[in-house]
Amino acid sequence: MKEIVAVSNFNTFFEMLSALPDDTACRLYLEQILWNGIPTCPICQCKEHYKLTTKGEFKGQYKCKDCKKRYTVAIGTIFEGSHIPYRKWFIAIFLFQAHKKGISSLQLHRDLGLTQKTCWFMLHRIRKVMGVTDEEAQMDGTVQLDESFVGGKNKNRHHDKKVPHSQGRAFIDKTPVLGMLQQPVKEVIERPHKVIPGKIVKETIYHKTAVVKCKVVPNTQGETLKPIINKHVKDGSIVVSDEWMAYHGLNAKYDHRVIDHRAKQYVDQAGNTTNDLEGFWTWLKRSNMGIYHVMSRKHLQAYANENAFRYNNFRLKDKPRFDLTLQQSNTPRLTYKQLIGKK
Ligand SMILES: [Zn+2]
Image (cartoon, rainbow, N blue to C red; front, side, top):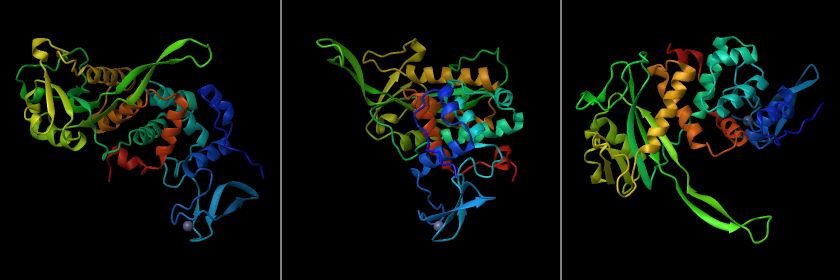
């Protein structure tokens, strides 16, 4: 039996192709990520197992010595029940998380030689695990708040959302999304150069990285937005928003700073702004127009989470971000029926 040790010393996509040359190598890599290399029964968590062979060949089938159930590392992951080889999955995942704007199912269909429909489904599954958010973790420090309208088909339409007194700033075919962005806390320190004696270099230390969360909402009224803000932002934090009336009253729980966008103010005297969040929206909308063309309302939360994942992990290199996606791959998988909305 050929034993391959899961190789972890690749950094780029190119290096991954040779570090993980076949499905066995990919499977072992996944076992390393999800089990720390020790097969673990998904039913009873027992680590004692038999290896099962098919026609004398071992292909990752285990049998639990305790509960006698058979399992593979794919159980409970996005790979479960998939006829697509691990290596094609891995290539799709690597490219999808590494590219700032994602990748289209049409492109993946050309690259992997699978049908576009299969690729579309794969991307949705990958998007779902990338988009796993910690709903319990509250943001604190300084948190920027803003809503945006995403989607819609008329590209050439006037897209400035700041229509005075319009009902919830709504546009009929656009979907409102609430964004919350915890500002990074960083400091620039000076330290001795690690190699050159006597040389001092500057380094940015992050005490807290930027985190963005977005929620697709039915409208942008206060009674819709405030409970979401209360859930995700810790009491007593500084919250920064524009003058939109839905944010009125936030000062009951928060130190609320209002940036008067109507007066063309973008940064107040204390340096508060919602510009980082505006930057995120620009990014989200570019990925919308450039890759997906039309983000349907039904899938918008998944698209938003996918982009939040890239934003929140942008300081990671492609490889650790790839590993992180694999780590999250054992979240409840998405079936095709769920995806297209059929019961
Ligand atoms: Zn078991």
